[in-house]
Image (cartoon, rainbow, N blue to C red; front, side, top):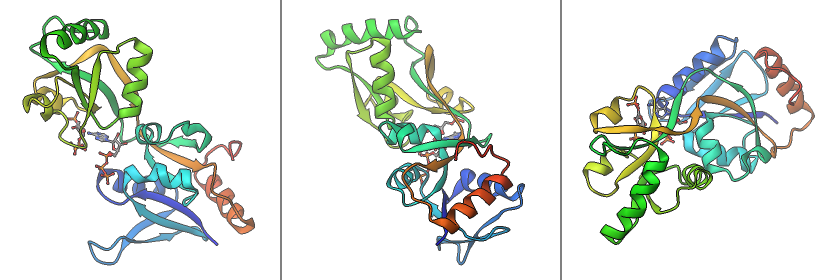
Length: 235
Ligand SMILES: Nc1ncnc2c1ncn2[C@@H]1O[C@H](COP(=O)(O)OP(=O)(O)OP(=O)(O)O)[C@@H](O)[C@H]1O
Ligand SMILES: O=P(O)(O)OC[C@H]1O[C@H](OP(=O)(O)OP(=O)(O)O)[C@H](O)[C@@H]1O
């Protein structure tokens, strides 16, 4: 049997993950046609590469269908309740860095903090008859953060992409989304609240706590961890 490593199947995360492993002597490659999700591994025996959507890697780790997985820690913390019981961080990979933040329209000149947002959201409901809407795909993380910060009079609206456009489209008043350069926020006339940082994220190598390792798989895992120069202790 083999140790299964889940890696994002496309885009920047895939390429940078392949580079990161390549620098450590482990060649990960997509094979076959451009559209075929087949892959190969060179430089270590007993390791299988599984190409997956970045957003599905948390679930596969939690279900024990992959032993190792690379994805953003934002996605693991969002998608898995009590994530630490299901996966453990082996190491951050130093790319895919982004912040999950709360942003409001630039035009809201008096709203710069969560306290201001709280005040506005109370007034908003009285005037508009519905709660202030925050567009996001990070439902769990945003709810937990706002609960801890004492902001209650809002509703989340689901947005799986182009989230910053929801304010212009009038389907939300505020957004909670990932930002890295800040360009998308600027282009959409949004500003981050001064205390609106929910989470810092980066591409991270996780190990499943639920995927069992047979004897030869354990040897492969040990060899891999040594090669990656990760502290063996957390195994
Ligand atoms: N602009 C960005 N800069 C850096 N990292 C980003 C950026 N946008 C998203 N990320 C990170 O990339 C990871 C994957 O993001 P996302 O869920 O958008 O995946 P995707 O590319 O749409 O893939 P899929 O839909 O297949 O899951 C997340 O961990 C996220 O934090
Ligand atoms: O701060 P910036 O560098 O501008 O990056 C932020 C944007 O990047 C991500 O979107 P992505 O490109 O993944 O598209 P999406 O809207 O489909 O999520 C994120 O959702 C923001 O929209």
